Image (tube, rainbow over all chains, first blue to last red; front, top):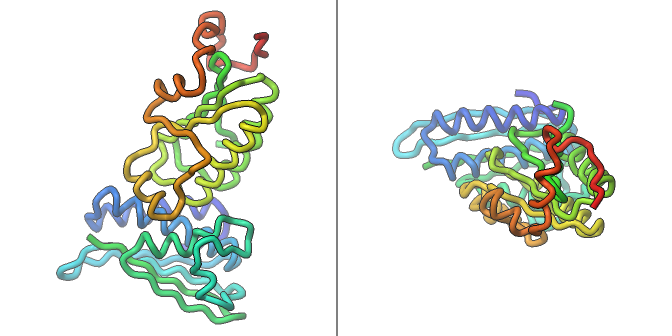
Length: 126
Length: 136
């Protein structure tokens, strides 16, 4: 689904919630993945200049959960290590979006090429 | 919804965030609240977030900002009704909202932001608190 305006961040949260419930995640796990999705959707909008998210549920043995892939064609992140540090921000925020989202997930992968864009995959399972 | 309603209850302002809101609406609330604090001379602001399924860093920062601005305008802010899963997630996110007073529910929140407001409720029978100036 597209992430082009601030209403889309709300839509992403709602869509992730529906999938998290469908995957059978408990309330705390649902809240964590929805919160992480909100952070990353906002980053996609504010820093990636818009992009998309793909939401998948997996029910493989033994894990059930939700996997989200955020993609943008924005400017990319020059220093990933720094971007993942608590409190580091280039946009006037709290600097907790990326680092916080990582803590809220079981799986977190980030690829970014300067001038081409960023892809972040996260998953939460029970 | 273009604006979140702000109710006046005695000398306090009450905001209940019932639905998931987008960022612009959250920013608008911050500005509306500071204007209403000055216009009404309110001494307390209570924000009920029991309807919120998540609080992310943006919303957390907004709550922190509201508390800081209110303090400068001589009003106390208390956030009430946070869901347990939201609290757990906020702490793990790295946001413990140290600048914001919290209370478990509206009743305890009212106690926290002062007791003066109850005596004025009787005379204040405008629906939803209205826009009446506080004469006190």
